[in-house]
Image (cartoon, rainbow, N blue to C red; front, side):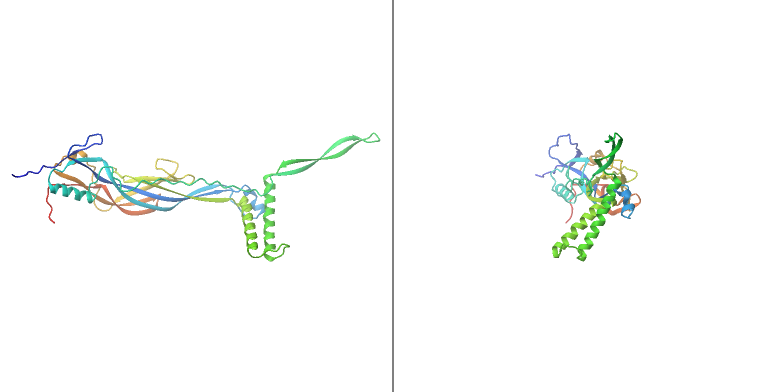
Length: 345
């Protein structure tokens, strides 16, 4: 008795449908492009006494606060995932050749299981906001004595004016505090010179000398920052993914945006400048998109994709941030292979 092999066939499969009996589900692969970027956030805060730095310290200080965001590292990584729009239910049948051929296509990545992703998800990491603080160094209040006069009658019956001093506590003006802080800075410098030259009653040696000078340097730096301002820095990193579409006339995609005040932003946030991913085909051309109906129409054959290699460039305006070559499956040609075909070893 001759045993006949059950022929293979394929049909469209949707996630809402029940899996047909005796079939395996596969999807065509598609490429997503992950861009991982690390930036440095710098924030300059002007000192409260910046307007008086020329007058009391003889240095010019920036009076306006500002922020900037600079790209430090960037990486472009192609990832492979299942194209959820092209899932096929395939009945391999009883042919040994069909089973072997199907497994060969799976192992080579030309067809993959639905829902497959080649990488783990990655989360964005944002820095904690850094707010610089200033130590004013001098007291904010001062005592002020005012001479008041009152009229009194002396023993001769004459009216005289008698001075009555009145002391009250008032807030110092910003310029007065700047002046006193500058005096503190100069006294610290003089005291430091006295210690280093030994012109002081106190004896410093070894670690005590170094510790004293370090503390005075730190104090002087803190007081000087009231005039010259402070700069704080923090790092921020995030990953963004783009899935190229073969139907797009121009292969330009906004991957993320950059703001000097907010750092990295998603592509739909218009408050930052865009960074583009530009895909260019060197050889060949992008194949048009194919429907699942067209794939299922070829009975007894397995549909697979051959990727098309493109050049991917990241652009910040006219500046090229990075460039690499990437195989993009959804741009490539759709091919068919007879499952029952016996391949020679």
